[in-house]
Length: 362
Image (cartoon, rainbow, N blue to C red):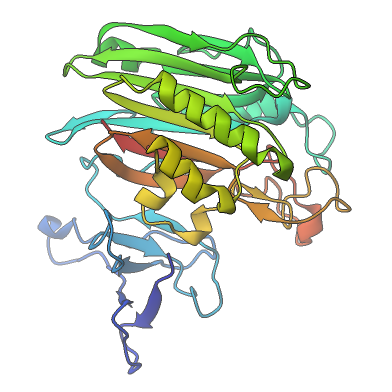
């Protein structure tokens, strides 16, 4: 989703998809005007501009903050929704976790391929990816955690219940639930409903699924199946990936609602057939399909495997849902370099993948 910007003091013409860039300033006249707060600072350390989504979709009319230099100079790609704190999923980086509304329960989901917590090729000696991830987990506090390429099947995180962990073509796939979320929202304990057998990477059968599926019975009466997966890799694996997704879809067809998150290794050319076969809805598309939140793999800037590796971008990681009530927020995480090097070739990241934090209404 690309939005054209017209500065509020400029005389430029505005197209039908344009948004007006405004900045709010704090009022000195009365404490009653505290709602008119100063705009957040973008990554350029400048006041951000407030804009409104014009594109048709679930977020049409919603206000957000962005870099004032975007799109004329591309800016720093700063993005933040502008909504009251009580709104469901107001800030996907907040630590508030799930919330409820007349529309239902808002599930905050994080999915990330952690690359077995191996350090980036350009990371300094002593950098501990797992410790950095734990700090991110504490900051985000998702209700559901779907991880791929875990280093072992016994990985645990404080405050989270591991529902299941199975092997994939690389490392392990894990599904975790925040314990406070389970205590506050579940009518019955979460249970494992499907876990694949040990996956032999040389046997390409769709039945050997690198997926963990769990069922939760919410206090609002709904039963939901949630899964974490790591599907067949490489471009030539498209037929196996589609078979895997179709098998997962059939296995969960009786679920009242279903959410599947993970590293699906998918290419854009597979979208239409996948969505037709499974009736899955893509959370990124449901949230407006914003381009800067698309690519969870971008080796043009993230040289995790070295500066000589093939450089391309792709939307490998996905969050799919079926019979959910909608998607409120969608953002990439750990997609910023962890150092301040002026040379882009010197930047290092947590993983070779960027993660996703999204809020799904069920």
